[in-house]
Image 1: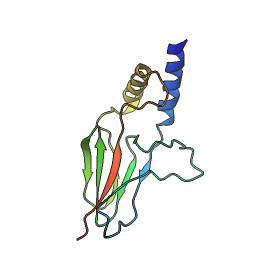
Image 2: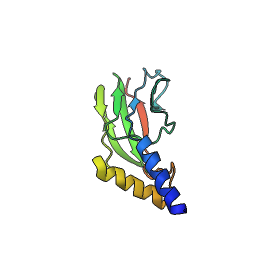
Image 3: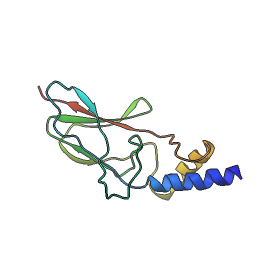
Length: 130
């Protein structure tokens, strides 16, 4: 029964993470060099996942003037954005579509199911103003 529970739990948690996120940072104060970005979700959103370290491919990363953005995964830089504007995140660790979905499910079954994410990302905003 444990394997069935792990499979159903993994299917549910991966399905819940298919919502795309939006990350943006208001102007950083002059005395702040770097700040961690957090996803922004309205109170009425169906995306109620509270984990800021799982970013879905296709999520929106917004960079303001005087900022740079760095995405870190497994202590490695996986994406750097230095131009202001809105950019779409493409996860280098996960293939897109059904292949990526079922690979995530199998990875989580190996960890016992649930909300264990083997792929975590952090978003950092860097102040580039003089």
